[in-house]
Image 1 (cartoon, helix red, strand yellow):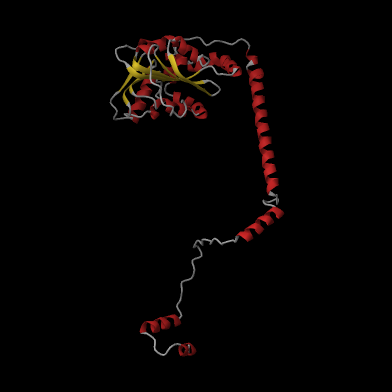
Image 2 (cartoon, helix red, strand yellow):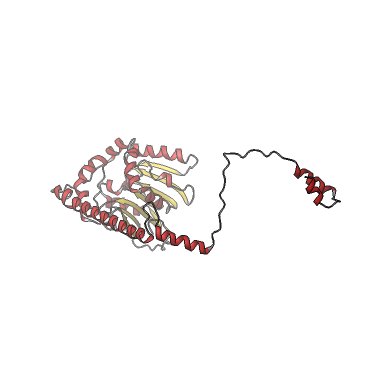
Length: 335
């Protein structure tokens, strides 16, 4: 310490002397915290060393088996080809089984007879949602329901409302001025009304009716009439669609989201085979040609979209003799 002081100039400013004296004292630093997270610093690697590193990887290989990059790419291509082959084999086997194993053994197909389904849905009303939730989740039908409800505006009528499975997707008030819900089953309408009041307690422009579509009075007109998976349950769906046209305002539109015949023969064979049993349980005839029914009613189809091997139909239509403006193609699933 004395030698260090001798090397310094004889006259030091007071501040420098204080700093020197403070540095000479032994300060006790706190021990490092073992739980403290240390952030590793990124070391700079010169480009020439990076080239050497890449050469070593190419020589030794990468991964647990020391495979070269070329070998890794070759194995990836091989895996993709094998996976695609297995998938195609599975699809071909499923097609063969459904066509020649299930559908071909059906024999003579039974047609589901049209009938009054009010008693069936009165009995199913309380447990209806829990019964069909799994099927709709598997087919992602909520996306189609949501897309249809986006098109609602003005005075809206929902026929065949059921328990109100579309209510969660409604934008109220939004562009909708009033809502009218109709179904032939009194128990279904009661469940729908209870669900609506729980979800929209302050909305006052909603009306619930127990009636057949064909029996609705024509004193009130609507801008949009829509139905989801209900045409299959009508005794006379063509007559119901013709009456819907009488309930439309000028320039009004009918929107249908339905299930029916598909675009593949083996699918239609399966639907035909199980149509009678399906009708007994749920009251719906799921093998109807929805497009043909809409055309027989005299409606002009603006747009028709089919999904799930053609069994899910989305149809926009209007009355014959009216010209509607073309909608912008901004829809998620329809246009």
